[in-house]
Image (cartoon, rainbow, N blue to C red; front, side, top):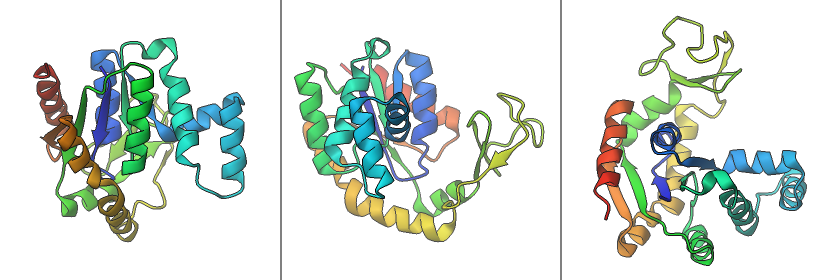
Length: 217
């Protein structure tokens, strides 16, 4: 099963992708993590991406698609993948379609997490992560069980993204609606789009996604 999670920044795509991957034996593919891994591995495409990033430029779509393509070919992806944060534009979606077609893979569903923008800002501004293992938390919705101690690794150091503030979030939302939201129409026309309410508790949203996927033919 190959899936895309779609939604604005802070909609919970990363959290849902991680848990969905564990439940269904899929691999979560985050473009940022894949880029860093390719650079660290020193692969041909990784070296190309590093040179571009070192120059302060954005990594072009063809390089990102190549990194995704190489990663999808790895044995652990044989059961399927969940794309988190990609595609972001119609051009990237078309390139991804071609990649799946070339590999004779099927895109089973695009799950859109529908959210309320005003509540979304609150959700993003309250986020923080464990600096040791990267586990995510929130001031209001997901606090560590023991104050100041990570539930996963026991770490006591936490950090917040410097751009997780209301002004920056609003700018990111504008970019999303300008560049990425057209993908909902694109995938609707292709028959792939499935929408769920992304404003519930993490467990509730996860169950809603499972119901959608269980209903696929």
